[in-house]
Amino acid sequence: RWTVDTYAHILAGLPAAGEEADRAWEAVPRDLRRHPQLAAIRARAQVAHGDVDTAEEELRQAIATAWDPALIDLYGQLKVADPAQQLK
View (cartoon, one colour):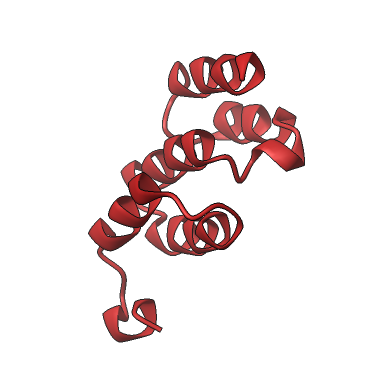
């Protein structure tokens, strides 16, 4: 649990996008990238940067790995280009 909290703290303190944010995300171990807390931080950063499609894709994958109410709520709030596709 402390590992997730540590990465969450690091990611939350970074700008929403850019090279520094991408490097920090790449430093997160692959098995932790789908953790609900970290996936939510990443998705919010992507949305803030205007990358809703990538946020949608990564959230969908994270939800498939760990069904989490907070991720589902965040997924439902996304303003995607094709809402009908999002419901599938």
